[in-house]
Length: 127
Image: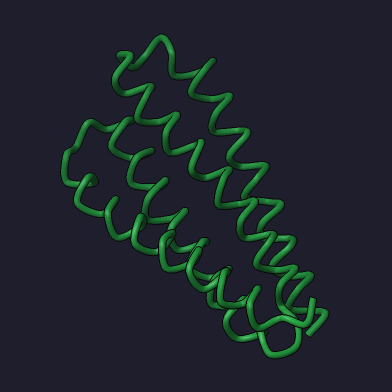
């Protein structure tokens, strides 16, 4: 179980680092290439990326006792949401291809279910 907690904390921390890097890239690397609307879309992706990297870390810390399965699913859904929601916004902003916008809601649903499962994990935990 400790290995699972450690693995999810590493994944969360790496996602936090990526969110910072993508945010800096939007501010410094893309500001000359993209219009303000595309920059806003990219920054929204980076913001939600960071929020859910932190949430993934919380879910990792909840992996204990009766909450192991629920907290693990929560962390996995936060990761899926980052890939689907933030990833689709990054792709939409950089390419301008509207097709990526159809993936974004699936990521949002992943985030929502992840939060509900995190609440359930907190309820089930011993702490």
